[in-house]
Figure 1 (cartoon, rainbow, N blue to C red):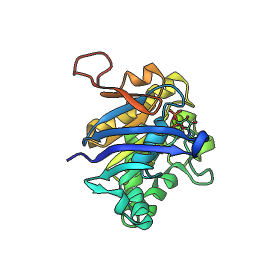
Figure 2: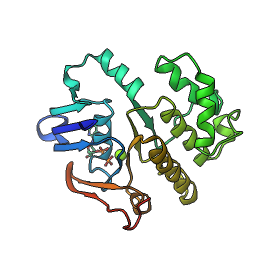
Figure 3: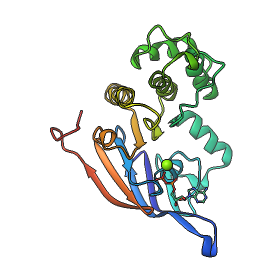
Length: 234
Ligand code: ADP
Ligand code: MG
């Protein structure tokens, strides 16, 4: 069973003359363990689509299913639970809490998911997995952008989510740091089998993905799975 499925999802903003269809009848299934990028020019609907999959926003028309369950039938409370337990988010601008250390930022994710046992140990165990061993005591402003984004990846992964959604995770990083963040995500995809969905319009980032879904004007215009051995495959 796909972990996530969109059936003819349309998302419109505004009405009448001012109506914008940010997504138009998008159908898509995501299987466990995918490492998938959404690409396409600015305004093509990448953020709108990731917000749908992350249950941060609801379709205007069509249906979204998470693990086979239609989200339209869930209460807002159930949706919040689902987001906290099952979906890890990584943002373009890192969004770490500045007054907390790296380790505390990671711990907070578990606490928000309602877990209160072994929190420190689980957070500690993430640090080497994102290449930040020994840096857990630092605050975000004492870390480089790439290190901050790897804290954000650890924060998303520590609760062992069903999927991680990263909207333009490397857009605020130079190419070396961006590369390290992607490598980290790819290694975690291989070791923990976590599903990663991310967006980018940088061809170097897109080259890392196994599946490349291209959007244009709110529609999927191509959906390719790269064969092992072809360029850009882990
Ligand atoms: P991308 O992430 O690929 O740049 P977006 O999903 O942000 O694209 O936007 C897709 C389209 O939807 C764009 O035309 C954008 O202007 C429009 N859009 C996005 N969010 C809103 C909003 N809150 N209100 C009105 N239009 C929006
Ligand atoms: Mg966007």
